[in-house]
Length: 428
Image (tube, rainbow, N blue to C red; front, top):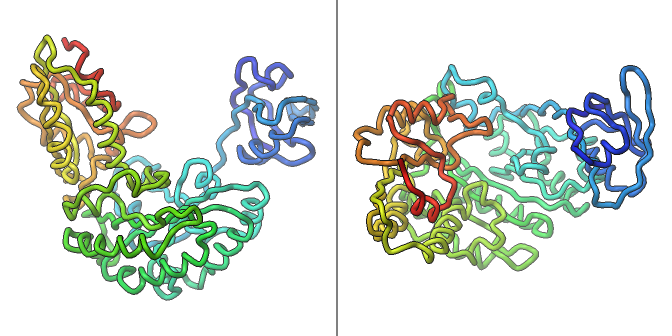
């Protein structure tokens, strides 16, 4: 039983008399516990729905097309917490004093399917595995890190084997597709351990469609955590030397590349970002794999429509992290600055909040921006990175963009990706 918190206007549910605040008991005699049960069972063309309203058990019969939704939103289920104690967990590297949600580690297969969140499968129960199979929750996104049992126990701090490959085998046998990631830690799961991991996973290439390799993120707040080495430029360069061999050795079931280093490796090693064909279907773009290529290609498409000049002079300051600042300056700002009366500067902000080894733009805080960005009188607008705020519009340190605007005394905007609008629009 789960509460209905919203009924869409003119939806099947509203037209049938279902109300917000009703509790959904079952569809076609199948209990409904969350949104996945709803999505799965509402696909039938004839629905017998039981509702609890004010202590009364009500029944509704609805006939519909298979792809037509009921039009209700259910109360979100409580997230399943992660039971691991990973040596690299970024959540445990946050400083004190942040909002409570920052410190929550989730391990919920439902949101892996729905949102692409990564899970480890270590805490997956047999009932949950059966539900994944029955409801065809595919694809799932799985953090692997290593397949060697001893290394896995060290990384996850497991007390007993978690039988990862047996779980993957069962998912493969039931045609559940997986996208996987390896958080790479120098001296822990690289070298021969990484090669073993890739070899072991490739046995399930029929269902594992991609393997992303991402560098470990380390902050200055690793109190009481094991010492780990960061991924530095020489390490990144050595890793990239193996990519051509992996691309020859490993292909997914569709004949596409199977192993994908995160963009951060290319930026650290100052290597050219591969073309679009390297990334196939951009399976893991939200994981920082192919994001830079997509960004550059989008800019190139938009640049074909740039004017030669604008009527009124305009100066814009783009805030970013230190990792991609040079690339943005050379491949984006240089082209924008060819437009007459339009000028762009790039300001890389050091991450003092987490530590200077954290270089990506999405983990910048308002405090660091306000402390470092000075002398902005010459600019008409300041642009913040697109992934810098959460769904509530605040940065990691609970700073709102409006606070940054008030401190800098300049208009501040979260980047929406539309260069032509930025160039053409008038400013105050």
